[in-house]
Length: 265
Image (cartoon, rainbow, N blue to C red; front, side):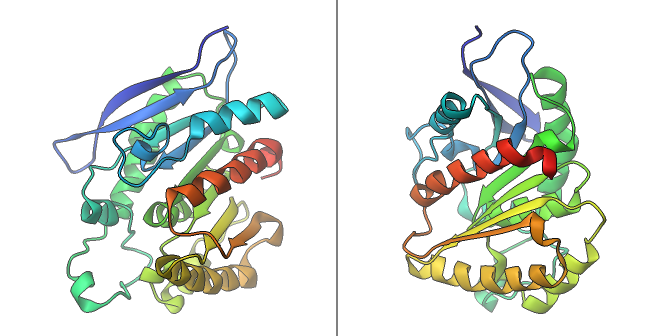
């Protein structure tokens, strides 16, 4: 039996002279065993609570519990941000969905670069993971997940590459930064015969999450107009705040559904 481990990688980030830290969690496994994989934003918040400002998702413990309960597990690929909140917002905010709908003073601070992050995940991170780690290859073994701006980015990347991702964990997504009209046009432009399963979650336990809830509701209504209903799942926990403690809990459900039903997606 090969023990679980976290392996750090440094991968060149597009349009930059910097390398980005990516940490890969591999569950305990037998030699030759392979796993499906979940690519996740905010890798610094995924595995432990040392030196993180906002809390931890404890994904290692969730993977262990799922494996013990069902015999199934996944590799987690956590992509770190650089620690600056505005730079994080920039890299996890796509430009092509539409014009930013936030207040003018905030709009002036944001330079949307979600397409660059999308390129990083698909063309730089995924080839390394699929070459060097024990991952099961193929669309039905691959998911993406994130929260807040990371939830928005997971939604964007999954719909941009339905041939690569069978599922997306879209947790507390920052849809509020766009208008419903632009979001509707963008979603309709992405409709294809094969689409990813969308696990869309929001709470309403604090002021920020209430705004998230409102924009998640109108986005979900747009999806209900045009998206295959069997590929949609909306989860609302009204008491939950905009915080890692909420995403830690909801990730357990997303992981279980992905591992149990991925062949259907």
